[in-house]
Image (cartoon, rainbow, N blue to C red; front, side):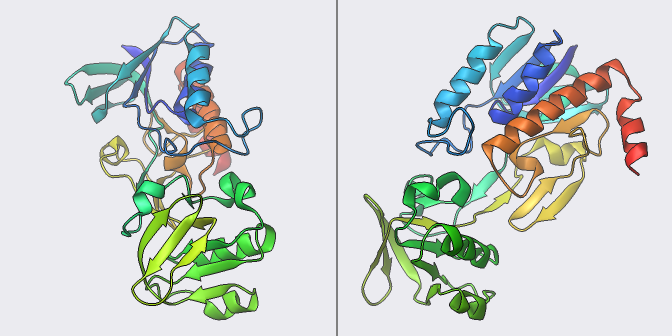
Length: 305
């Protein structure tokens, strides 16, 4: 019986593991090696790691954990989790079964990208999601926002305010945009439907009719889901975010299901490496406190009520 199984070995999961490692708790990290930001050339806005490829940061995190004997990694996918606090059973895709007292979910979310030829291959390079993460590198250049929902206006107004004076919204058939507010902010509106994207140093948008348009980058807010997540089968509470559902957590990243903690992108509608690392550390500490003091989390929740 392990103290904890962590499902997902990216920033949040490794941060959670480090807290438990320093308490010499037995932990298994199950990870299939597909971090959400694997397509990005660099992670920006991360103190001490600004501009460093995400894979290099994760390699350093793993190297740190290698010095702790109670931490193990399993290259696999958690397909099912059953049981209850102090007696969970995790079943992996390969058929391995692991018993654990606690579960920490840090496996992230799945991006549902707009269905536009050329977009998937440019994702994380010239098609981006976060001005904080990628906006500085294309500041002052022509930028576009590919509308996929109401967040498009929000993104466009952010970019126009602090990153570029040349911002265009590609309406893409979305009829919920506040075009008056966009026009008032000196943001251009392109009503033609994009046909495909062609990436090079920047990205070219080809339309069904008329000339193409060139941009340094396109920003878009993809929908996300928890498809295949053990969280759903564990019965944890979910909240609705602007881009999709996320797992509801408390002050120490505890979920509504006793003994189950969660951190990282699956617990927030705003995604960032720094948030994932901080939430992971809090989940690891909360998990450890619950192992020592069974009444710790219930008392915390009662005090917050």
